[in-house]
Length: 353
Image (cartoon, rainbow, N blue to C red; front, side):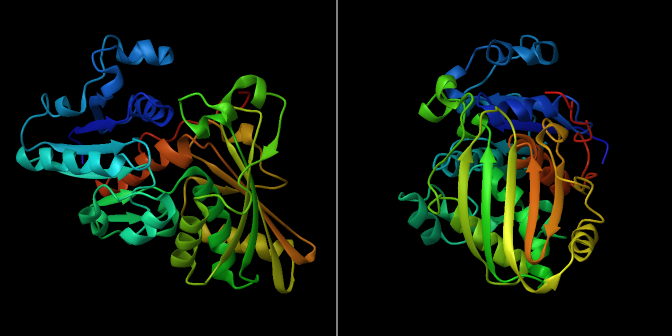
């Protein structure tokens, strides 16, 4: 496909929205048609994201009811939603109604949690609110791209950042049958994972030179990670997850531990992961241990393994804003439009961030 596809970013003034805008600049097929932000409508993108001033000049954010005005009827549209959990579904439903009225051909990738559950009741039990568009649930699939060879729905709910890092570490292990089903996961995330709006956990004096766990064994994304791991591996998994806030802005480091069913060597484990991701351009099994600086600002996931025979360790690093959100969303959108999966996502990590 060589023609340009119109790209629309909903929730474009947040951190994930800003990353979507940055990545779209160099995409060979997606051309930004609208950066949607009700709170900043009419303001220049560069006033919010100064690092994007050269790319977008005087381009402004638009309100939700204005995004389709400059898109010709019948156009192809890649609609990305970076709206918050609980607000994204209703916004997407309205956007799809508008698209239908203009005869637009649309694929949606949602970075919120609103379409990560197949059942309305499951979502509402976790988030304690009514789902904003239950009629659309069967039009979305949720998985990391590496674990699903084909997709039958027109839209995708992208797993979150902790989920992406954990699933990439967990699913090949569970599929291999080498470990017991209990997975013990400790993850450390950067402050951008909490979003653009300031709060106690992202306040610099509190976060800098500090490390602490939060919501141990009670994180609200644990049930969705468990459900996705079960679906991708075909095994029942019990996840014991302890997230931590780290003293850095970007990145996630996950350490997964499990008990081996019988003695297993590190070489056996490496073979499992190398074979699992042999055709996955954004996953690399590295020697030693993975480091955040080698993946930050890229769409890569670096994995490594360790074993003492009885215990298994899998380590996973990603950029929470890229592979865990905006980059993963573009990766999915490439597939939905039958484009090369790597389109617009091949920039290397800067390394010394």
